Length: 206
Image 1 (cartoon, rainbow, N blue to C red):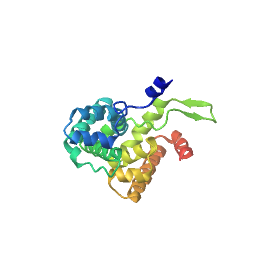
Image 2 (cartoon, rainbow, N blue to C red):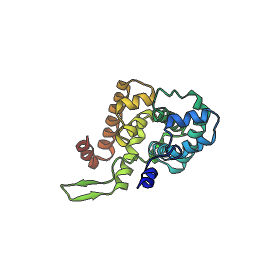
Image 3 (tube, one colour):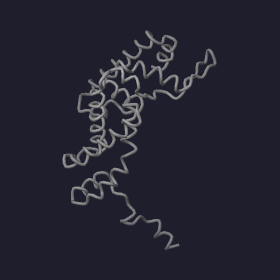
Image 4 (cartoon, rainbow, N blue to C red):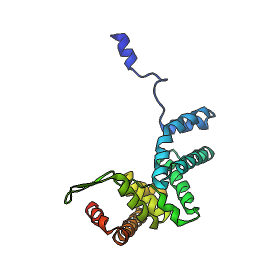
């Protein structure tokens, strides 16, 4: 029994360092710890990139660029703040720059906002498949600015509160709410204009 209890007690080697500790380890001259940090954050970084950009290959490229910038700027991280907030800011900045550098606004139509998985039309008894909904919202989201789109993704898809989004983007919470309000308004206008049959679904959701 004593031996079993000892196995249940976490040892120094088995306890995973938190993000701040890992960053400090890297700063102390152990760059191999950066590999551990990358493994820990890869899924989160890629997921956010993909949701903002909507293209898998572009999301991979942007994720790699984020980690390069992370390595180059790790000394600027202030441990008084949550590491993920600082990382999210880096991801959104890189993603927004990427979208702004697109040759044509039409490329934004390819973005893959996974707003909903399925929507059930109770009146007609029809289940609208996810891909069909995605295609509609891909089209209407093309009118959004990069920042509006980023805020929309973080709020509607990642379910982040406005206060956290404001910290990530380094702006006022009121600015986040204004961008979100305008994004919703623009998308609703596009739905009514281009896809009136889906307009009711949006109104019910909001």
